[in-house]
Image (cartoon, rainbow, N blue to C red; front, top):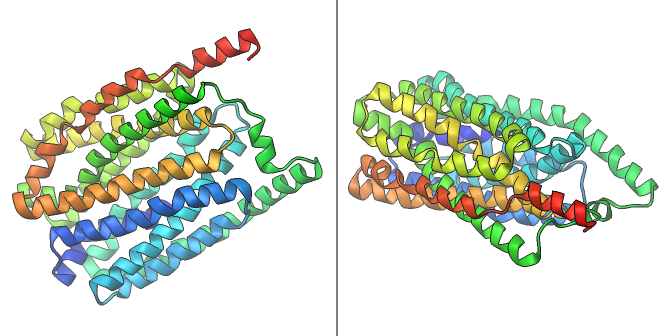
Length: 386
């Protein structure tokens, strides 16, 4: 439900563009403001909740999203739109780090990849519903019907209340047992030396950059690409964006369990580099082939993020909130900056130029080969008693 509401922003771009006579550069600016508010605050909220866990952070974050959504529906000017999406971004930054920590707690530590995939596939399914609901409700009836989705936010807040109560009981039990949440987390040992840990984090961030620059071209401009190149209607372009979103949900569901089974390093490497042939072919394909290639791209590349996030959490097991906030926030930030740059590029060179340039970004996935195999490192440490 959270990510359904978040995805309404990009799904409503064609409506906003026509309603307010916006340029592609201004569309990119909207994405930049939204993603920046999420990316800047997510690591900060993650670090804060590492030290002071809050059972009620989830409904509080959704309250921000609710306020921003209602504001966006009736925003009369571009600055008002920017303030609205900034507020929605704050809601995301409060929600994701603590929700990711709860996912790790709920897994019991056994199958964290599967748990993280289930958590993220909920987000991806929600993200796929956003364009579909926008096509059914916003495109035919106008921007003010964005306010109709406020009921989803209210339902989400109600759904989060029992989760918050469960989390509060967990915190109380830990305190009564004489150990705080942070102290319990720090008992986990770091699997690699400091230098290798830092290097691995930098490689993961580099992979995030390549992945989210490419996916920003799809999430922010795919509908415009289909409209301009193939002459499809706004409503049909949103339905085809739904196809891409469904493929990312399926890929996210696969990425975590595959990482649990064969190792996260191999999933990360294959999921980003493996997209390159499809991405390079897409700008030269017909509409039918474009839809098929986009489905394959979404399925493969989306399997990377659950593996990347759990790999990073295993590198720093005593900073789950910070790591989750950093990687969610960095992903949002890269996507926002990329959207702004790509929007200006589309204004100058045309929308098709974006896909000719971004097609080569997944080739950066080759650097994943240099990530250490954590399973071997942990097994070696167990044998030596380290």
